[in-house]
Image 1 (cartoon, rainbow, N blue to C red):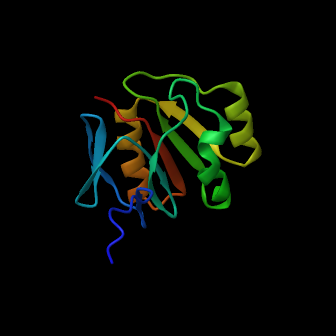
Image 2 (tube, rainbow, N blue to C red):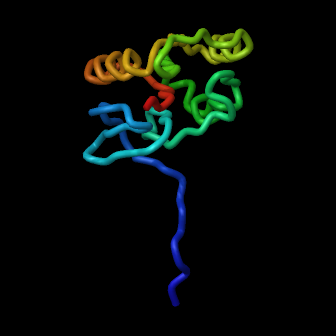
Length: 129
């Protein structure tokens, strides 16, 4: 007997360059995703920070679980650059992760370059319209 629609966490099990962004989402691996993304060594996840204008360490729980595989975190903060809160920056530093905030467009471009170089990179990308 059918159970109906099962909604699962958005997850692509692999690393892939971001092909496009805008209109509230992203395109990668011949798929599209509406909303923000967290790109980690284990895959690309749909990501919904509690407040995209005030990120916290809790928003990065999945990242901290993979901290040993990440050296650089690119944080795409939307259309404009916003500095990371001091508490988040300290938590990332303690985990051995260097964080670079920038606009989402710049983060996408930089992520793709570092990914092509097979670097230990992760990206937190806030969707833009």
